[in-house]
Length: 216
Image (cartoon, rainbow, N blue to C red):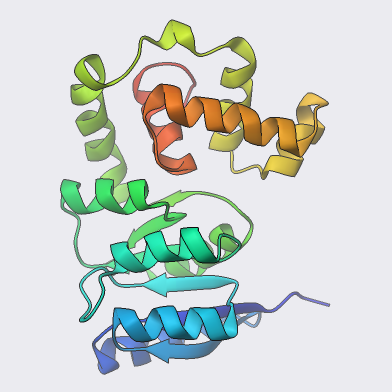
């Protein structure tokens, strides 16, 4: 049987929510189980329903998508977060990734791409809209010399973990590939986050690519 992906949708525009819901539920394995029109309601419904994936807009009344993402990471880390927004400004992208979102996709993306992003986040993968990937890499590279440790501090094992994380492998899958426990993988990731001053797996991977630590 196909696993049903339970989605919470949060956007302060009812018409936008309706449109997103309509094309998401074209996928047989996606069900929108709850909708929120502000950030406070989103937090309440996430706590109540514990969806597999929360699809959040950034600009919402009462609490932004960034604030909701931080709350989810603190209280319900098992919930995947996909930010779906019209904003492609660098500060928004950086703030979302630092807050710990699993994905960032623009509303201008094709419906099939957004559906795939929900699938990827549910599988533990990191998702970044192609329209902003190149610009974000350039932004991170521009800050690298001043803000990041020299890449020699990252060990070979940590590079191996990063390379597999970049391919979308979960901690457990990385452990299987490298012959180590998923707890050990988590330990390596924690050290990587510290060395690269990264707040999420996605940000760590992007910084590692910009520094030449791993291939894109």
